[in-house]
Amino acid sequence: MNTCLFCRRSNPATRPEHIIPEALGNDELVLHGEVCDKCNQFFGSKLESFVLEKTPLAFWRTFLGIRTKHKHLPHVDLSQPRKSKGRLPAVHGLHDDGVGFTCHEDYSVSADVDNTNIIRGIVGGARSQFTFVFTPLVLSMMGRFFCKIGVELVCLDDPQRARSQSFDQARDFARLGNSRSLWPVFHGQSGTIQDLKKQQRDADGLLEEVFCYEYRLLEVASWTVLVFTVGTDAWIVSLNDPYPTPAILETFAGPKLDLIWYSPGELNQRRD
Ligand SMILES: [Zn+2]
Image (cartoon, rainbow, N blue to C red; front, side, top):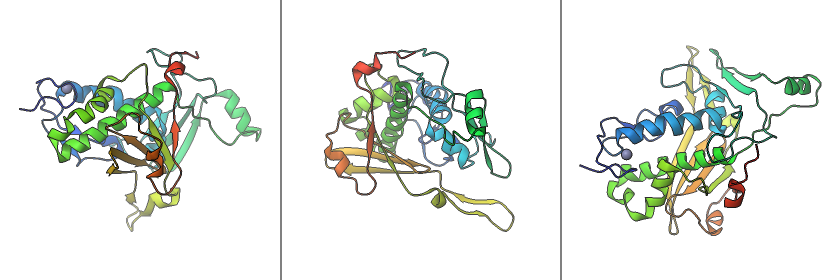
């Protein structure tokens, strides 16, 4: 019997582990017997639920009308918590709180604004956009989420390789996080909104094809890299080296990549 890919214990591993959450539309890409039930439970209830509710992935899930695993239409509230609870800053003054999105039965999407200042701004014509701030907590959780998916994709192909030392840091970061450092997440734009919904309705008025996510696992020079696209956002992480040299940016053709980052010093300065 394998030990758990993440905690390395011989805990029972009876539940299927969805590599990409069901709430993004995945019901095929699954690991069996590789991730223990405790880690499986942790990823579902703490990590994936956060990423699917409080990051740009939440927006895309709603915008594209990807139903929850219980087949409900998605809606999200992108408000930050009132106070940071853990060690990572989770609140930023420039973030627009009280903004959410709801997908309706006809797959139209509304913005739900519960913030008087923002409503005044929109009504008065001074505002047409919402500001989303990537706090250290958001970036840390996204890094953990992508590390989890990436290592599990390696495992799908080769369970022994996924357990090798090269992926130790990514596995630990996914499972435990790190309050002193983030995992670098590179971001680029991929495609257009028009590309995402193709032949949205067939003769019966049903949704035909919506492209929500796409993933690729690449070997680039000495790096094993996950490219994960959700909506028009491409997210890129190196799985076997948390601090790749800037050369990694040059190896990707196409749109320019940015690194969204806080230094370890900034992580310890709580802003709220
Ligand atoms: Zn485990």
